[in-house]
Image (cartoon, rainbow, N blue to C red; front, side, top):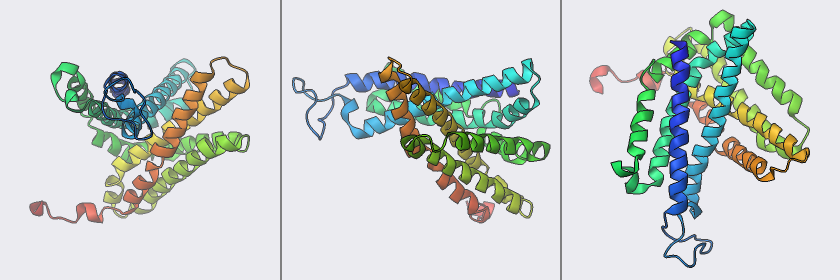
Length: 304
């Protein structure tokens, strides 16, 4: 079951990636409207879709998720190898903790990104001719089978956080803290763009976990009502960590004189986008979690 859940999580990534690749090509090819800052295609009847900020926002959402998620699943695969090949108990505990995050977060977000890719096409994305509607259906089922994502969130909060006395989640927090401590202060731009956002998001995640500890025992619904938000917070922090790692590697490559300058600059720009535009979602999720279960459970069943 755990192996299947990890595989389905990768399906969420895969659907987002193929949908993004198609949307990107369409956005470059489809002519519609004019760039408000100045015509980019003066010899044509219109500019390509990709000049428009809202299309760029959608494509950057997709690109930054797909690349971050790919790093995340490869990181998870390293843990599996360490657990199986080296009998690394800490790696085994960490991948156990992250399994519901990989399955739930990546398929929720994978579906969302696939929908965004479909939206780039406008009406063409809705009809069968272009294939985008098939991608959305394929992405949608991944949120359901091998354990619906609501169940994944409940597993994370109800079982995995407390597993082995909370040892594994504390190890994750320590891993993030150590990375921040080892890499902060070396470069002002890197701190601003990567380290500081990761630190803030990790603080949000830890605060949410503390809320569950303080309020979940007196009223278990306080934890259960926030489980979906917590799973998404956890996923964002994981991708934030991946982007901070990739940002560090890109800076090192550029400083080392790599000739693939465009690749590494693109990687840095994509990472900065995720840290600035996606990672702050942890603050919203924390606010929802701390509102507790009262508003969620207020209505009698007959009043829905």
